[in-house]
Length: 144
Image 1 (cartoon, rainbow, N blue to C red):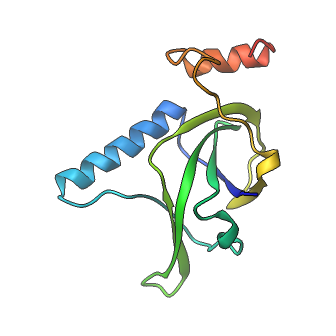
Image 2 (tube, rainbow, N blue to C red):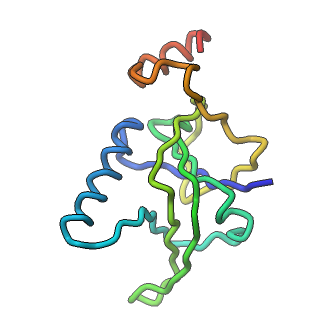
């Protein structure tokens, strides 16, 4: 059973916003002639990284709701120039919308068991061009 990480996507307003950040970063790397790998750098190294890497996903909390996930390809611990342990969480650059679920604010990350993770929104469940805000409103009304 996969283990996942739950993390706040600070400053992000929507899934489209997150995807835009990823694309901007990819284009910057391309302009600089660098190979692009999407990473999220965090100050702490997950103790349970063997259960996460390659099987788990990073679930993003956007505006107080678990809204999307990205598969974790690897977790690469390193020591920064300041001597503090950190890690790069290497992510597949594909953002997968999930069924919205409210989530209280927290610091750092939280582990999320596979059985507790929100389900992906698959093609056909909601129109792809439906605005995220409309999807949230319909879900709040119990229509999605």
